[in-house]
Image (tube, rainbow, N blue to C red; front, side, top):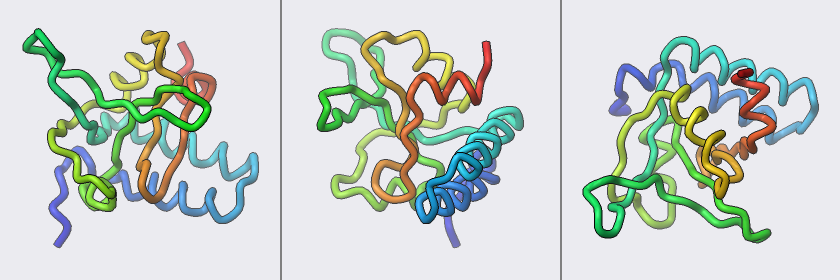
Length: 136
């Protein structure tokens, strides 16, 4: 049995939508995937984020991935299964509302966006796509 937090239930719909999009990258499937994410967000869905201690403070920072173009991204997982597929196991994680994660990503200039499931069923949500999911 997959250990699943109640707030992650329903995220498998996001994984299925991303998987379909990976097989056939069309505008229709992208729109469908963004709609599925929006629905999970409106249902108070959460994702798992990786954190690291902030040097010199008691706060935690969201971990970043740098892509080959030099852009910095936050990353999040739709399930514990997705998190475990990583090459390096993530040390510290916590659950965050999809809504709040997107709000924060839109306000941090040095972040390009959020990568869902960076190891497997991956979707890179830049700020443009986040704004489509979450209009102001």
